[in-house]
Length: 111
Length: 116
Image (cartoon, rainbow over all chains, first blue to last red; front, side):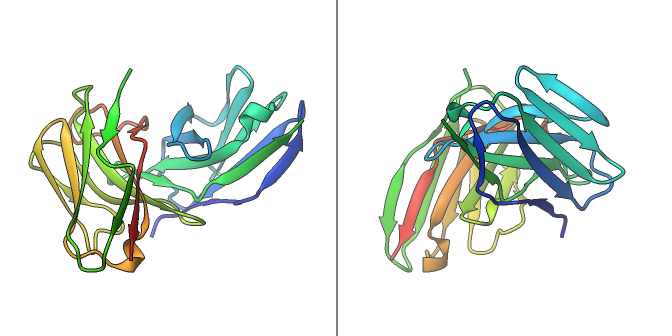
């Protein structure tokens, strides 16, 4: 069974700090990685995708990928209370093409 | 904007009842999915469909079936509901081409099913 693992948290950071969310995956052949954000009572929405080793930046968000170590992370700079949500890591199954989700990390940004 | 609409936000059913969960998307997406979401378990794929009348089992298909008679509509069926099927059910769609799943899924608002 291919797996995606996340620390469920909750992760609590003060406003303005950097939040670091981590994810590991078991399928060494995976090539596509995604971060979804899910506010309480809402459905997930895609915020970042990354396909190559290294960093990808989009505003306050940076996704980092290390295929050799099989981990992907999401950094949120200058965290805001509005960033408080559950962040889901998703990995595309290299064989079947479907997305495999981690259990999500709950982030709480305190004012 | 892509809109994925699930017919019922909240349902309460009794053990043994047949349950239909409907999902409609308005962006002509080829791929559609049904997930369930439970605390601590994340999103688990039940079934997905690449095209009309095509379906593929996900990771937890037992106790469920699906129907896709039209491109825009994907239904999840619980033939005989059981208490362990109490969950949040999320429908999603994504652009194809058919058989190739992009990573961008558009989710509906979810259907919270309680089976008593």
